[in-house]
Length: 269
Image (cartoon, rainbow, N blue to C red; front, side, top):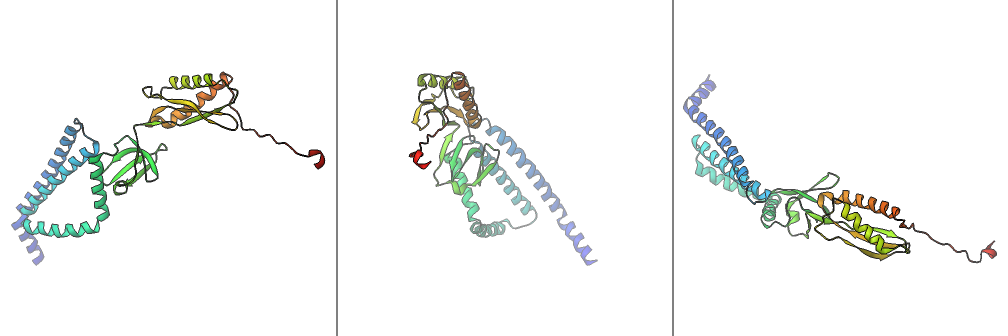
C-alpha cells in the first residue's frame, strides 16, 4: 500500500511536469529532424563538399537535441548548473578513454577542410588504393574494382604520403612486335585503336611509342587516359583490338624463342 501511495503521490505531484517534458522531447526530436532535412536540402544547392555538408547538418541536429534535453531536464526539476558541471567532469574522463576516436574525429575535420582528396577521386596510401566513395568524420571508405571496400581510420591518413590520381587515370599498356615490322604502320594502328574506343578521353593526348628493344621483339607502349570507372574495361578492350588489328594487318606478335646449339655433338654420340 505504501508503494502504491508513493507512486500515486509522485504522479500527482510531477505528472504534469513529466507529460510536458515528454511533449517537449518529442517536439524537439521532430523539429531537429525537420531542420536537418531542410538544411541538407538547402546546402545541396551550394558549392560544398558532401562531407562538409554532412558535418554541418549533424552539428545542427546535435545542438538542437542538446538544447531540447536541457529544457526537458529543467522541466523535470533537475538543476541544470550541476548537471553541466557533472557532464564536464564526465566528458574529461570519456575524452581520455577515447583518444583514438577523438583522433579520428580531429583528422576527419582536417581532411574535410583541407581537401587532400574528394569523393570520386582515385587515391593510393598506406599500401592500399581505390576510389573514394565516402569521407566521414571518423573514417574514409575506398572502393575497389572487385566491389570490395577498404575502410581507413582518418588518423591513419593524416601525415602519410598520399598519391591522388584524381578522377582520371593513365593506362600503361604494351605490346611486342617483330623486329622486321613496319613501325610507322604499327604506331598508326595503335592510334587508330585509341581513337575508335569510346572510353578513351580524347581531350588528353595519349603517349604512343617505342619503349624497349626486347629479346624477342620491339615493345610498343600505349598510354591513353581514361576515367577511373573505365580503367579496367578499357585495358581489356584495347588489348583485344590491338591483337585483332595487328593480325588483320599481318603484323607479327612474336613468341619468345631460344636457339640451342650442341657443341661436339659427334664426339658425344
